[in-house]
Length: 419
Image (cartoon, rainbow, N blue to C red):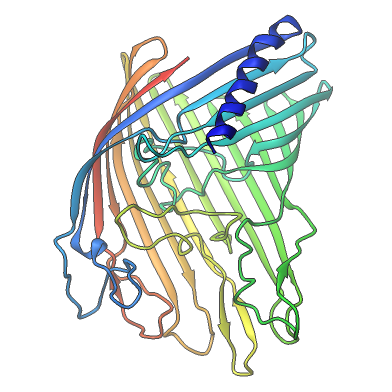
């Protein structure tokens, strides 16, 4: 791992010093550091003795802990980066490389190649982009920005879909200065081969994911006076081979989102609405595990879930999600005050013949974030966020009990240098 990082950084700086002689190159980066205090309720921190996981407290149960609170200092990998931009003299070819790293302490380096793409302007109104690129669907990033290494950022799992960079090919079609259409064909595979262990295989074989048609993302960016409006759609069909006859062998995901942003003098208004089915998968992860909090990864976003029907075949039931966030802001001198609220409901009724295996979780969050510009490129951001994990959630555990998943809050400050 260390050799890989050394090689990557050496290649990066060689590229940075060599390219200026050939064309336009800009090299930069970001250094970010978080100090955060978090308080997690006893319900959210209680461990289920059967699974050693934190599901919350079931109806009629009791907490066995006092919760958790403490301070952390982290270099969040999602914000610390080196990057280089390249442009040919005629700007027909552009490229970007970005390497991110950080983690949960001096001994942890969570490094990865996050951006790596080339864009070719074929005509004045048409550009083609290939490589590892930010997703087109649900592309906005609201606050909070603090706690990436430990908790939620960008209201992920609280109304906002996960913003992921995926390998893809994307077309940018400009109809005018105010109208742009983006069409992306995204790698359809998932790293963790979801559902391959849940589906029964034919004799002598193993179930394998063999998705052929890429995930399709569409977004229409419209500028109408002070408003920017971006409706978007996504579609993916994941298929599985070597599945025993009678069981499901595919999962179809789709989603729709609309993002709005407007500026009126010192006032900023922004928000996004997301809806879809089966978005709680590795291709559409809408929740990160909240450190020392209740189980969330794989539960938000309306995940598809397997169950055995009356004939003994495995079915994959479609999940559903609805979420939104809003984050208005107001500029006051060197500071901008943002307040934000997010909401997300994730459901799956699994076997239609019973209600004891239903999944239903509603999460909400709200807070305040105040970035303050100290000097060019350097800012500090005090931030407070309160998280409600749901006090009447249901899990597909066959009990039909409601669970109190508790709550948490975080308070801290982020230091950021952009160069």
